[in-house]
Image (cartoon, rainbow, N blue to C red):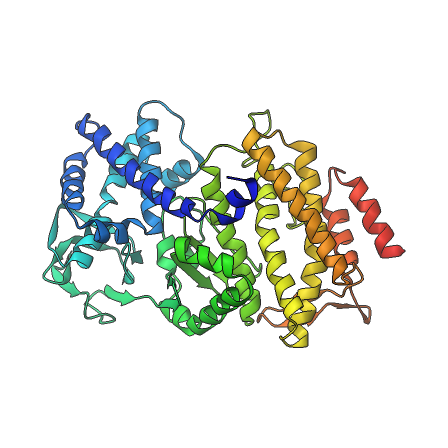
Length: 483
């Protein structure tokens, strides 16, 4: 497979990641079967595992395709390794802090209990009863994997199983029929349904509760947003997906294979979207009012997912004395703080399809002038950012053969983006078009005139390149701005 095919055409990476998590589940079951005295809860996990293993394969796949299954497997494998002396990873340390676990053994015992929502989900999908010997204490909201159901409320819910179409809860004992969504029990615990947006073969849950997981690093306020906010913007999501289908059909086909869940959030002080490597097929996205800007964000975040999947082919970086994954050591033209090389590589990758999206819009020329002005701004900005990102990687990274092959392929495409922009008459004198808090597109005015893309890029570099890594790019930008 050529580098270009691996970067943009291989839609099987999403299925391979699903297969990997399934194999991981088998490995966890075998490890725990061989050491039943390791922690409490192993016997019940093994009993539920056997119940799940007898399920209809299509129903199991519906559950296990949920992004949370990959998160569960990763934590289980890492906690098992830590129980045998391996150091805890970053997510595992955050997990322990968040749940108050003092050791990997304690964390593993708790985590095995968190397999129960998957058994619960399978019971709901298959219409089969399942019971828990030790009830599961669920912190709400709880997204029930592979389904649109969310257990919501103001207090934790103690779940004892699923029987006759209803979730059984304790304290006090009662049932919550999944067919009776939205009703409120005595303590406020209820079953809700998240919206599902379908556009041709793409179908996506809008469910912030999917991200309500310990250690994942997603702000709690985002994961607890009411589903009413998701319903309110479901039409905007449909418009954004339709824009991708129209202007970037090859990405649209990948969405059908790999996208599962989006959590929409309102604009806050920082216009930010988040993709977690631990939740394949899912991301959090700020809602602007413009569907084309939202479509651009979807393309951006989804391709982070894609590159995380490609990385499972092997590492991109050789081992060195700097932390390429988490060490914030280098200037990036996309953010205000120093970034790890891994973050810069991801930015180069995801902004290539974003550039192509806005390029297709500008070539089509059928949208209104405000959107076309924003497209021109993006086509002026992104090629310069791509080149700076490539230069930073070439200066500072030590790549594996796989990493070198892919980065050089991206570098070639970054050069082509510069040529495409020139061909369309785009220059650094293009005015900046900003996004307001409400998501509207507006020119950036300063001292009575519009700020240009070249000026904004130069200002960002002068403020952010505190280590003086990009003197050559600074000189070129200054020449373009002042010439």
